[in-house]
Length: 305
Image (cartoon, rainbow, N blue to C red; front, top):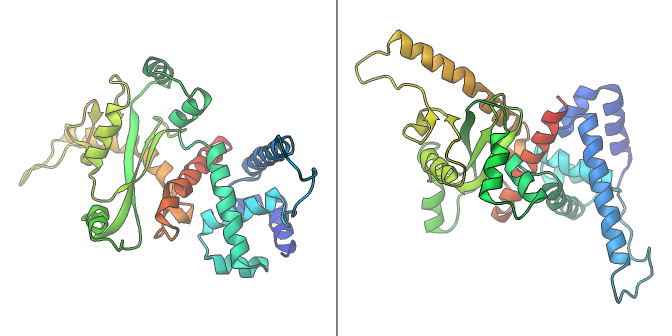
């Protein structure tokens, strides 16, 4: 594999940081932090394998990887950010498509493990046995204000099974989709909870109702008209049939729209990674892993804004 491509990409980060960020979706500092995490994890795995009881191969034996952690990480980030085909990446790097496939499928689970998709998942990883009372205490320490909720749909190839076709067909989008939901802080500073890969047939309201059942009752939310009737949820007024909204209702709707803008901005940043915007080409079992990686990368990206 040609190392000149990686050298040019790293040189781009040094000379034109914004162009480098547009290429892989992360700034230099965020990329450095992720690289260090992945390197430490690989070193720990090598040490674990070397100390495995009954190991017969000498330390350092076996086939060596032809590309270091940073190179494999950059290949995966380019795939997530640009959503190039494996052929396009392979031609750019001067390697086989199978090599690119191996790098992506090796790094995606590792990124998913080290970058939680949301604050709730991060708490659960840090304390797997967290109880509901402890969860409510953690949520009570969040900044004051209503949480923001919204969802988005992503197109998928038409399923071959007739039942799956019905379950994943979205009447709103007029295509087969997967539905995702994001709950963010009032200023959009972090993702509180994320639901990924639901059937396109499910309504936003029903999906949010299920999420509310798993969260403390005291939390309040702001959403669009799709969430009318949901508990503790503020939504805009709907224009009555053959009628007009009052001036006070119009001002209230403007207030709600201004608040909701932050969750729409977070979803926009998620869709900067084209794998979360274009039709999903990987196998369906990889959907939550790939889009979960994107959410984790967005959380890391926001820390360095």
